[in-house]
Image 1 (spheres, rainbow, N blue to C red):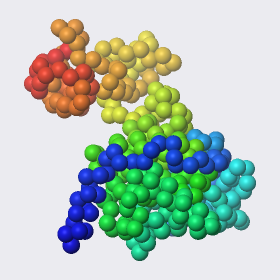
Image 2: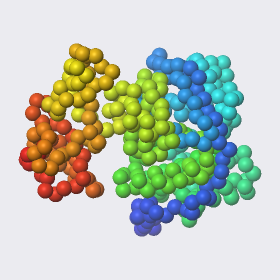
Image 3: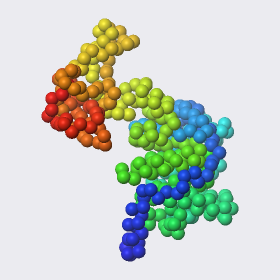
Image 4: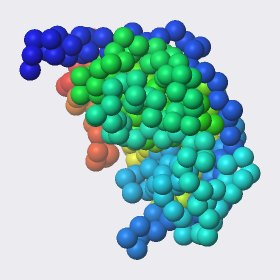
Length: 362
């Protein structure tokens, strides 16, 4: 590695945070509606999407969550036109783009797809990487729009460099610029922040969200991080076995999960099995009301680390002992042992340096 290249590399690492272009300059797209109606996809004989129903209104940001293999990335590829379907229909603004017998080509759909590995062209410099998606635009206009996109992501001074000369965070920004430069009506981002370290992720996520709002494009973001989905999405869809198990806005899907499996996606849970008697379940944490449940019904009670349980002052409450403590910004996360509960109970509380492992609490 030459000294010049090494200096460029060092510059790339230190300039990832904060050096983005002025907000409001990404350009506005004509947002499109997108719908999946009973869509089936089989890959290698396995049903990846199974009668999938999903609809997005123009301009909304939808985050997809689900276990590996639930069909998240396949949805993006189907919408972009690089994955055929074996049943059902996909429509953009009401126009049929995919069915068992029809497949509109990707360049005719107005869909931009940002791959998880960025899929940059190593033999093209930054400017030509962005221009690649503008091949149907007159060259002078394409260069103008590509430079504007590079400026928005803070890479305007690097347009003659090649992707290998960028840090991971800058490669992510280049991939984003290439995706929104053509101003597609629909944007698809496949785990766009998964390769970034924690120092960069929050900044890049915030800037990316700002760009998505500026373009006003209808957007689907695949993520494995529920906190990220709650920050980015107007709605969240939980996928299970190739179908939507639940879709709703952030507040409702967190507060009203349709089942325990979905609740587990959004936080650690303390789970206690119990039996209902006279409208209550008796647990080591006390009597818990169980409205709508009959006597002798078996139930599982699930407690989140915040909002359900508190560490009490004095001796009011159920005796417990702190096993572990994890300090975070402004709060502590405890694992506590409660008699007759096999697994430790997780509680998140405001920071308190006096509470330490080994302390008896209530």
